[in-house]
Image (tube, rainbow, N blue to C red; front, side, top):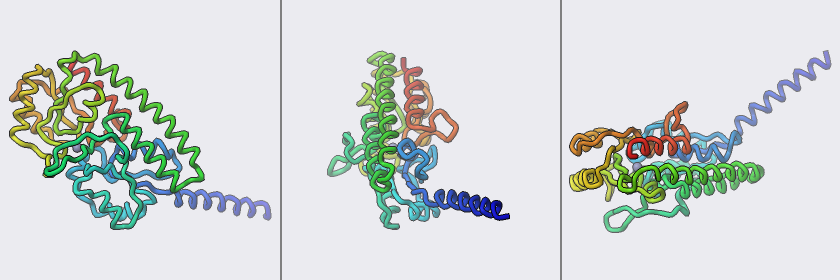
Length: 298
Ligand SMILES: [Zn+2]
């Protein structure tokens, strides 16, 4: 009897211990799906990573859900993109309301400016250059080490591997875009999400909608921008234009009809693909985008 009860005690302690450890995993709550992927690459299974936005959701237009405050209140660390990607700074407000620590991932990124009324603003879509994506990852690595210094070496190792993968991705994109004739390297999409991508990989962006799909300063759609986009398509004899997974495609379809040009496919912009799709990770979404762009424009 004695050994068996010892075994039972051991079993209950082990199971209890495991559950307890599970309960105590630190929780990271991210605003966007891209940031959640970066965080997962760094923390592995050591922490629980959650994203407020689901695949396909638009961060500019996002309206807080009833459960968001509770989600953020339980976070050990909150991660936002910043530079007003989150319309009216919803992630910052959620973190401040519940007094949770917040790290802005664009901190230290090389920025592009967009019109913002009296003063120019930073274009928030910085993750579209792999160099800036690497800055996001370093910011996340440093923030994670601060809350769990005991496992610092592990976080540094994972981040180092992932940064190598981002460098490889960067070089691969350059090679792929080189397959498109120089004069055809014009990327027409729903809104101004691809400026960093175009600058990093040698393309020119043209869109009917500014840096936000919402009604924010310097953003939104204007008849002038729409006409400029159609003019660019005609001037460069662009073969195809693209819709975005997180933006209503009506406007791009209208432009395609007017400019007599094809829709080349659907690109991931402000949100990655759903779980189980090729675009469910940052590397996957970038890879799939580039394949679609090159196939349609070369
Ligand atoms: Zn956007």
